[in-house]
Image (cartoon, rainbow, N blue to C red):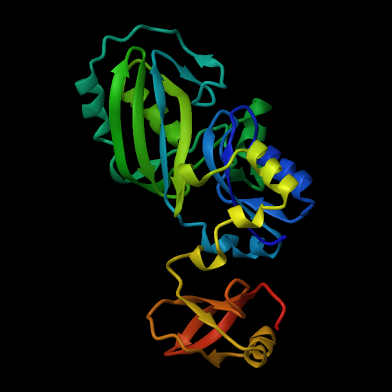
Amino acid sequence: MNGLLIVNKPPGVTSHDVVAKVRKLTGESSVGHLGTLDPMATGVLPLLLGRFTRLAQFFQKDGKRYTGAIRFGFATDTYDADGAPVGDCVHPQLALEEIRKLAECFHGEIEQMPPPFSAKKLQGVPAYKLARQGKPVELRPARIEVRQFEILDYDPPNASFAVDVSSGSYVRSIAHDLGRQAGCGAHLASLCRVQTGEFRLEQAATLEQIAEWIQDGTLEEHMPHPRRLLPQMPSVTVDVGMAIHLKNGMARNLPDYSAAPFIKIFTNQRELFAIGRRIAGTLMQPMVVLGQEG
């Protein structure tokens, strides 16, 4: 089974748990997710199945949009509601406009320190494993982009928000740092990913819905059409002879007149055969081959 599923991840499970569930439901062993969601988080979790897992590299830089709530009054060691409180719990006297003013600091390109409980690796070991063992976690700040960070409302002690960030950003760190700016501590109380790249929450299906589609044999009908994936890449269709050359790694001139650095190569209306990289003009080198010719 080859394709992409847009899952609405439920709370309380890991992204890996969702992958394992889909493997069991579909019988497809090759399944991978695009962008980890923390266990407490919900929302858009795209999964690549079968040969489409080879496309993951082309989705890695997609931006992400979230909504959620930040709880003011105390920080936690994980920067979210799943962690243990750090310091005393206080009842800050904050106003909506004051929080919005503080949030203005989190805009554009900024340096962000990842949470100690994160998947960032230190000498090959995930930071969260070291943190759980009580070992020092010395992470380095990363350069991220916050395209939008809007405080929507404040119902003490929780502030609702919407944020649009680059890949690799930690919303937990934004919540933690905002609490530090406010002088009272804060942590991420809830989080929902409403969009990643071109995939939106209204397109996402629950695991229960996916199970029903598999039961009635309509799963493929609910997957995005391959020609709609990676919309920044134009599509071309080749015949069997050309597909054989491309499969053997040969560069070929293909009928594409755009300036896009990569193109999607199909052997029919639906069968995505390969991703080609532009060498010069219309000369394309196969970069990833997914299908069989013919």
